[in-house]
Amino acid sequence: MSSKSSNVRLGLFVLSGITLAVVILVWMGAAKYMKGATTYVTFFDESVQGLQIDSRVKYRGVEVGRVTDVRVAPDFRLIEVVMEIGFDGDLSHDMVAQLQTIGITGIMFVELDRQRPGDKAESPVINFAAEHPIIPSKPSEMHRLLGVIDRITNQISRIDFEALGNDINQTIKGVRDLVQDGALKKTVDNMQATAANLESITALVLSEVKGGELRKAVKSFNTGAQSFDALMGEARQALKDLRLKETAGQVRELAAVLKDQTVAIAQLTRRTMVNLRSSSGRLDNLLRRLEMNPSYLIFSEPPEQ
Image (cartoon, rainbow, N blue to C red; front, side, top):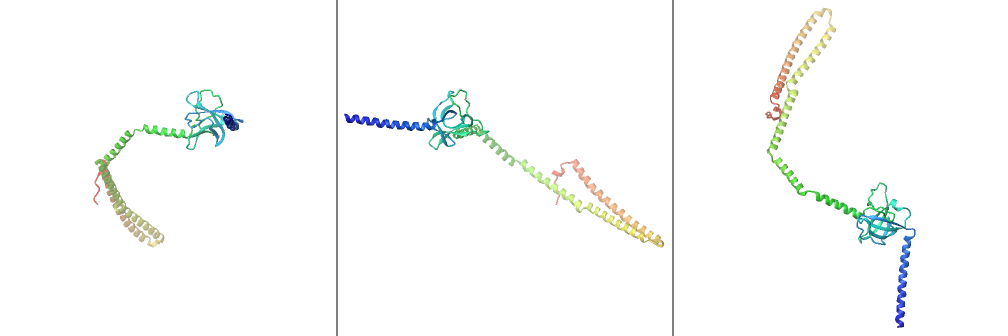
């Protein structure tokens, strides 16, 4: 009996020692945060699965506090997370809280970071009084990703694929009908005929200008003008060399030469006028055809080669 009593006392002593050690360790760990720690609260508009009491609070990866309570907010919409944070300064003005996950374990912690100027305010609206200073929050990266996927899914679901397929089929059918339509082939043939007519007209005009009568007339006129210039030069030279005794004879010779050249110039002028009248007649004939039939240039048959 005495032996059993001793064993009980020994067991109680060992259990008390273990309990005391655990209490001391917990107290020492808590003292690290409680020393200069301030209580803050933040609210999340998303699931906090994996976040629990004593979860870590970190500032850019450095542990600065712990979670002391996780509960539903008074509006029964948000999740309220109470934290003890050992960090100098008023964190409710320049800090933002975000949920982070440790690897693939699903365990969560609260990550603190400073708000950057110009950042969009993403913290949920708080329409009730809070017990502690509020640190604004922003959605977690997973929540953002799921939101993007959800928006893309909604946009895809709004697409009427049946109507889109029908429109595509109608477009393909319209293109096929246009390609197979005889009117398209006729239009192409008319365009080819028009191109041939324009080419023929261009060749005709070039032949008139380059190698036709108009060119000959201009060339003849230029030749006559050159001869007349040479004659006048000879006349001036002859006038310089005139002697008084030969004046009458040279004047007669000069008159004869001038007469001959005048006749030649008159003949050249007549030929030039004839050529000009002929060209004018052709142009007048073409204009009359165009006046009676404006589509003559486009739809007439090309001339024989």
